[in-house]
Image (cartoon, rainbow, N blue to C red; front, side, top):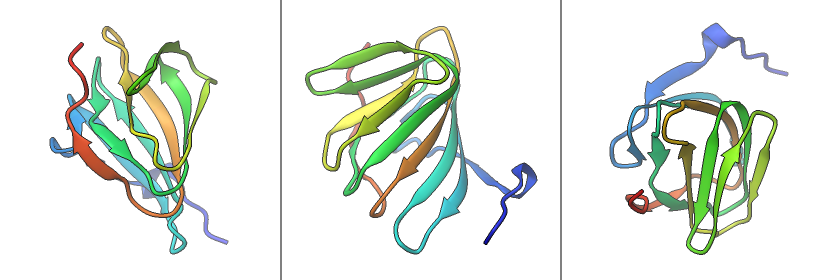
Length: 122
């Protein structure tokens, strides 16, 4: 067993090659089996670039208002408590709605994402 306390979490700024706007990423678990658990804080309107995961991604909104987009769908107004399941290989982006910041818990399986480029214009 391994316990991770908030002060033990390694936090870093999200790189500009993967995020639009200011993002803070705290990786809590990076398992040898490819499972990653992170708390991601998005400043007002910040969001990820398009990306795909080899496994699943689960996003659980903790605070603020979340947006999630795929090539053919946009979900807006996701409030704390909302959970998004992204299946393996689905091209998507996610982040804070304009005018608000947002924090979500991210769980991914089977290794890191492949990053594809900036999100669509607003």
